[in-house]
Amino acid sequence: MEFALSDRVIRALLPDPGLRLTVVDARRSVAEAIARHQLRAGAAVPLGRALMGAVLLLHQRPKSERLTLQFSSQGPLRGLVADAYAGGAVRGYVHVPTIRFPLQDMDRLAHAGLGRQGVVGTVREMEGGRLEQGQTDLATGGVDRDLELVIERSEGERSAFGLEVALRAKDEEEEQLNVVRAQGACLLGLPDHDPYAFDAVGRLVRSLPLTASAETLLAELAGDFAVEVLDEQPLEFRCRCSLERASSTLLLLGEADLLSLAAEPGYAEITCHYCGHNYRFEKDALTLLVTTSLEAKAGKPS
Image (tube, rainbow, N blue to C red):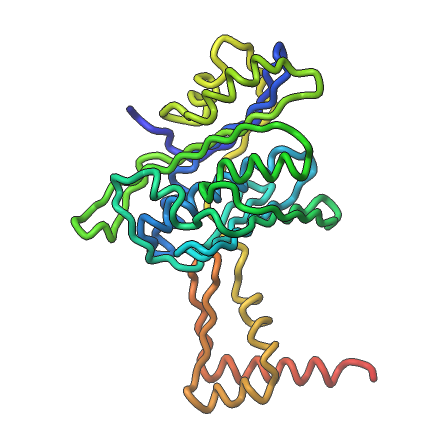
């Protein structure tokens, strides 16, 4: 099977039964997340599923700018965060990246990292900056059933999610991983949808047949139903961190602490949780930050 060359999310309508179906192929985005955070399999699978889940949830509501999933649990992973943006970007991280489970034990890989004890929170940012927040208990820790519960509690709707991440080890120690598959789908019904059709398509969504791309996954799930594609968008792992934001974070320490760091050890480092990028500020850069900050304060009217 020859896989798609780029990641993609497609939002579609099945007009006859009144169903909304969104699919995502995120193999490269998940691979980028694994590489940036140097994840082991026990952390890679839950994060990959959460990244796709955030993308699917984002696209269920028009005028959504950002959707953040925050899992906090008693499992060995402790929790994770996944961010999806309307511009086609996704990013995320786990609290404990080195969790190891056998690659052959797919059920354990999908559920044991987070476990069943914990909560999942959602933060949706709408156009104009308005925030909608919610929180519910974990259902299974596998992300897909947890998101079904999120929609049931927040929207009062039935939904069906399917999320699959399959990995292959590059070495015997399983320290380097290839992403064989990272696909997901979400099914929702319009107000007067056909419940029997929902059940039939929902079973396919939850079992999620292996296909080569988002387009072929959509066709496979829709079966004999006519499909109306509403929109489609490329997807990539992309972070919003920057040198300017890292500088602003350092300034929160205050001028005295920055001067102390400039003297000993002579540098400061900030690492972005979301993408793992490290920003290093040498002595001269720290001194310049302090000077710029003091000049800005001096220029403000009292």
